[in-house]
Amino acid sequence: MNHDSTDLYRYFDAEGRLLYVGISFSAIARAAQHRQLKGWWRDVANMTVTHLLTRRDAEQAEREAIITEKPIHNVSHSTGKAPKAPPWRCGTCGKGIGLVKEDGYIQADHFDEWHVVCKSCDTGTDRYWICATRVASVADIQRWSAHLMEKNWFDVSSWTTMHRRHCTIDEASTIAFLAFDRRRDEVRRAHLRRPSVSVSDL
Image (cartoon, rainbow, N blue to C red):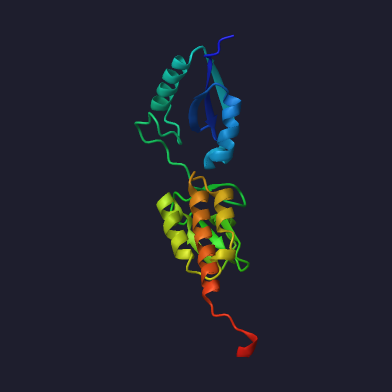
């Protein structure tokens, strides 16, 4: 048994677009890690694995695949522009949105639940909405999280959950959670600063 043998794996979406290329001593174990950590994992529909005899062979094959095949989510060895992946997925039909103006919205309803909808699935009944193209990067999420923290309903809304379920940007749910956490701490501090009322004051 060759203990240096390494798997070269590729992930594809349902339309056959190459999402990611990587190497691992166990492609199955690595897939389980990606599933937990990568926002784009929800787009994976197919996986191919090639077994190579040595780690060095696998590293060379990985490099060549990334340079020539231009997977969407690889950063290392990438020299050309890969097709951009949609930053959001419609919660109703699963369609990718956020690349073309007015192709979808991020909305909060009257119960402070956030939804992600494409234009076709939009019912127009939500009370607060943002064009998905305006929340299409890590910097956008930071800006909008900071803005929404000023809303008195933000700390009870599902902003964090919405990112975890529907956003394909890897760091999105972490950033949204930090903003949510910061807002909750501010509310607690404000509550603690309120003067207490004793029975003798009444």
